[in-house]
Amino acid sequence: MTDKDQVGESSLELLRERAKELDCLYRIDEILNNGRLSVPEMLDQIVDVLPSGFRFPDICKVEITYENHRYRSHGFVTGLQIADHIDIVSDGKKAGRIEVVYVEEVPPTEEGFFLEKEQKLIKNIADRIGHTLFYRRTEQMVREWNSSIKDANGKLAPGAEWTAIIELLQRTDQDMLLHVCRKMINHLCSRGIREAEQELCELNFGSKVSFTAGETNYPSQRLPIGDLAKISEKTFAIASKNMSDGEVSTRLMK
Image (cartoon, rainbow, N blue to C red):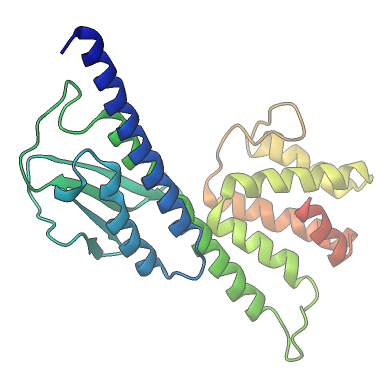
C-alpha cells in the first residue's frame, strides 16, 4: 500500500468514527427530548445507545449512576483498566456519573485507548443529561407550585403567580434572583418611588453588591443566601405596595 493509500484509508476511518459519534449524539438527543420517558427509562436507553459512538461498540459497556441508582449495559464490569468516566453536573452540583469501559483488550492509539473525540462525546452527553435533569426538576417544581397556589375553584390566589416565580428562583438560580431584584428596583425608581431609591442605595453600598453597566448584566458579586433572601423580601414588598399583582407578574416575565 502506498503512502497516499494509507493517508486515504486513515481519513476514511476518521470519517467513519465521526459519523458514529454524530449518530450516537443524535439518538441520545432524541431520548433526552422525549418527555414521555421517565428519568430511569431515559437513562436506561442512553446506556444502550452510548457504546455505538465508540471505536469498538460490541465490547464497549456503559454505567450511569444517578440518585444512588445504577443503569448498566449488559456485561458491564467495574474496576477495569480501560475505562473513562465523567461526572454529571446539574444546577452546579454533582448529580451522577457516566463510566465507559472496554471489557476486552483494544489496541491503543496515539491518543490512548479512547480517542479525544470520544472523551468529548462523553462530556457532551454528560452536560446534556445534566441540563435535562435540571429542566425536568424545575418543571416538576413549577407544576407543584401551580397546584398548591390555586384556590378551591382552581383559580390563582392574589399574588400567587409572581410569588411562585420568586420562590422558584430562590431554589434554583440565585444569581438570576438578584438580577431580577435589581431590575424591579430600577423600575420602581423610574416611577419615582422613594422607598425603592433607598433600597437601591442599600443594594449598591450597604450590602456591597456592585453591578456592571447595562440593563442586561448580572450582579458581579455573590451575596450570602441570607442577605439575598432579605433583599428579595424587601424588594417585592415595595413592589406589591406600589403595583398590582398583574403588573408585578408582567415585569418578572419580561
